Image 1: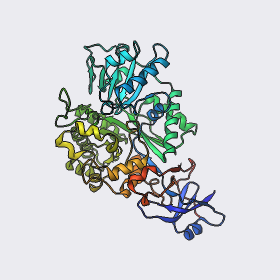
Image 2: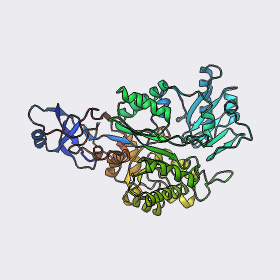
Image 3: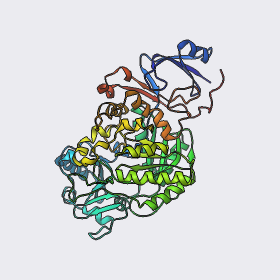
Image 4: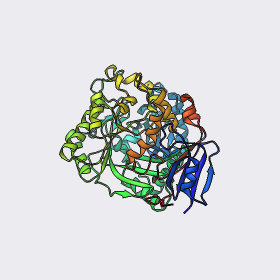
Length: 518
């Protein structure tokens, strides 16, 4: 079994600013991190030496919440509207795609943001741009959708059609919110497994190019799960993937059964997903006071009745599944943390659960989360890309609670950073690090560089459930490596995203469970 000693550049075994001289690796597992002399001694005679050429080696980076197949879909077949900067720009792109499609085919796009556009696409506009064509344009947050008349007709949505629980239908404007999206999605041709596989591979290949060796795909249903398992069986997954399996798809009250658990070197599924509320940038997260600049006044959407959510969470918890639940607004956090606390009282000692986004926590929320061993999975890049939306909508009473990242660490939580791509355009991890360090929405809530990088390394491993062998370059751990063309600990924080990625290298799938003796 080959042994390699890496040296010739800064090596950060714990992404904390303390560099070592060399790293010894055998069979995909770390043997030693320390001096070159000691690494060579541990590696033994005949070990190869890899000169880093001055580049920086980190534990493999993890995006703990990124919609892989949707990232891939935007890079292949979906109309990408994330760069549209006016309604005229959006209109031009929609008209162009309409002209390219065969008659009757769906025009599907994603990424519009009314703050960038200066307005919101509506049914009348889509009907004019693509006459007679079913059009679905999803907002960047994926919680609000603009649809054409033909799309409403295909979904059999009439002016008096009731919205499903946790959703809203505005027929006149052609606007669907939260779970109502499922009514239209269910009327579209179902993607084939081959299409899902294409999108997954496109997404993972791109994410690997950004330096990630592992990701969580946070909303997977049965067809998508089947595509992942087929790719895993064929040995085609380029990086590690952790799946959150959705229990309650949008569009109705159907509950999917718990999935079969799956563990392999590249694919893990032992978690389920619930959506507690909407998004903050689109003013659909469930909040205790009305949003600003909303007509009619709104406090967002709470998607579950508490007893319904508890029943589904209890089933998963008792069966040993971890839960990753989307909760952003303070009301959604009240509800979800109450459910988690009840599970701990009635069924103590179960798995640690996650809160995806954790957007508007109070100090009480954070204290309770720490008591319950909750893993926080926020998205620091939101602070850069969606700040104008927060300025426009967040109630003054809650403005001091917008993604207070430092408070997560101060409370003693395990924190895993992520992008939630393709909700945002920027998926580079060092852009997330820069936002976390330099762009807090709440003054004083910026974090240190070591905390931010730790949330992309050890934090990501904790969120995946494999912190016992990933997230650091420690003896016996998997040698998942991210190679950078510069040293983040000796770079101005504003320039961090410009550091080039030289490679992302998950350890070989056949890496043994324990390092072999020298």
